[in-house]
Length: 140
Image (cartoon, rainbow, N blue to C red):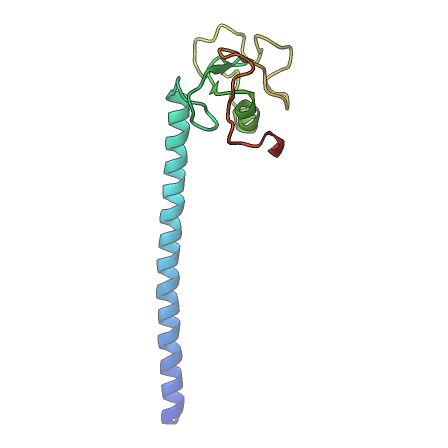
């Protein structure tokens, strides 16, 4: 084996070691990012469930409550509709534990909570008040 072949083999071995080391670093960084994202998501969910003041969709001051579970809080119907894809999985399953509404039965409408349409909310603000004005209602 010539000196040139030995040098090429040595360079290939070093390149392979460097690639393996970088791959390991990237895999560790990816695992850490996934762990952090999962932790952040759980924190947000816990804050939503614990909050009686904030909109579950946008975080603004909530003035309305989902009539299906009497737990989810929203600043208006737009945010309630935007959150429905996530919320309908838990709506009516006793999030508050003391709901006066039978599970899955909205108090102000005959639409089931497993439907594709969220139950109407109980209104605390006049219908003409501006809610979620920075969001385009034509987005959904």
